Amino acid sequence: MYYSGVIEHWGRGLSMIFEECKRAGLPQPKVTDERGVVKVTFIRPDLSDHKNGTINDTINDTINDTINEIEKLIYNRIVSSPGISAVALADEFNKSVRTIMRVLKHLVELNIIEYRGSKKTGGYFSL
Image (cartoon, rainbow, N blue to C red; front, side):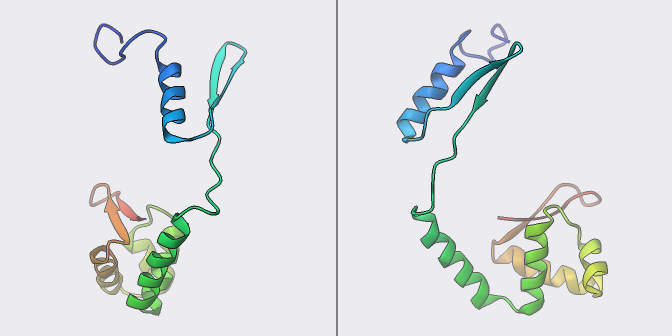
């Protein structure tokens, strides 16, 4: 891997991880050796007082003010089941696939969901 250029230097990965965590103001990860397997555990920072609360409130207000009840139900279902298909949503909500597709198109235009994957096996995910 070194010779193909995939890695920069032998043994440099952990030190780079520690440097980046320090630079970002994040807690240092915990490194353990479990029966010959090196395990790196990242400690999630406490974001309860973080600015994301304001961002999430703004996003939630936008969603609640601009989408109707069926759109809210479909959005909540996509959040709880990432990758769900339009056909599965139509079956679940007892609506036509065309109606579901119209709702999904509107949610995609609002940039709150996206479609990932191929036409046959892809699904919808929240952003």
